[in-house]
Image 1: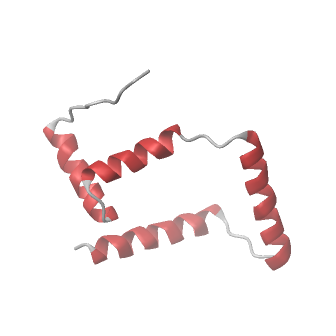
Image 2 (image 1 turned 45 degrees about the horizontal axis):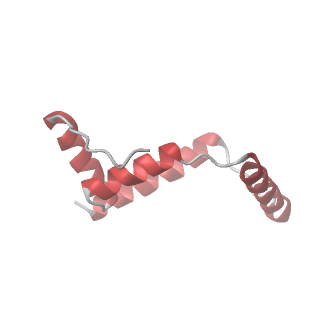
Length: 87
């Protein structure tokens, strides 16, 4: 079993990582750990089904739905707002 990893990142990647972390309001270490957590956490079939049912119930309740373009536009707006906050 792994006791942990030390990973070297070249200068170019380190600069890009620092910029991305700053934009997210995190330290580079916290940012990388969040990316790793996202990459290795795979929801179970039961969790995926439960989330799908939750979303369907929300749609049934509100009738509100979004196109993919609308979702991406909202995400992009949030990213831009966050970047503006952090200079």
